[in-house]
Amino acid sequence: MKNIVIAIDGPAGAGKSTIAKILAKRLNIIYIDTGAMYRAFTYKFLKNNKSIEDKEAIKEMLDNTEIDFRNNHIFLDGKIVDNEIRKNKVSKNVSNIAKIKEVREKLVLLQRKIANNKSVVMDGRDIGSNVFPDADYKFFINASAQERGTRRYKELEKKGTSIKLENIINEIKQRDKIDSTRKLAPLTKTEDAIEINTTDLTIEETIEKVLSNIRERG
Ligand code: DC
Image (cartoon, rainbow, N blue to C red; front, side, top):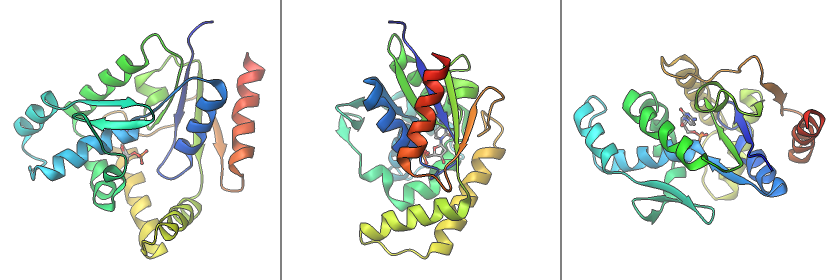
């Protein structure tokens, strides 16, 4: 069977990774969370207390950074960092790190390399527009900022973290703004992507829409 690439893009908290994970399982192909890669580098960057202006330090750090996925875990320099990269401090800073040219260049190369000769579902912001412009299937998963904030709020509540809903929504809007207005590979829906608004859809309904589109197009 021919290798396929399914690109899933969209703003923060729209449900991309939930959808992509389930999809990969059902199709028995690999899932690559590119946001997690930007988060892993951001986590390392913050831990090292470097300035975002210090391009030399960033380049050196990039040269000495290994990110990969194994057994559904993300590894940063050989260590699992699944939980560390979801911390609020990383979420708050990741959009500004993801704007940096050198960071994007390295991570996009790595994304293409990981997907080489495999069938993959890859989620992010620029997969259909930049990483794999020739992807076989492209989806743009969206939801209102209010709904995305509420989902995130419920997730955090379950974990016992209390942050005001209003603050979460504002942070999401702030990230949307940075991600969609940056110079390099901004968040955008390409013309050939199928847009699915998940505001009033369950996870299963969204999966069904994606799968029926894939089936229709063969
Ligand atoms: O999907 P996420 O929220 O985990 O992504 C974290 C950040 O990484 C997001 O705010 C922007 C950046 N990102 C990106 O610039 N390009 C991608 N392909 C994926 C994520």
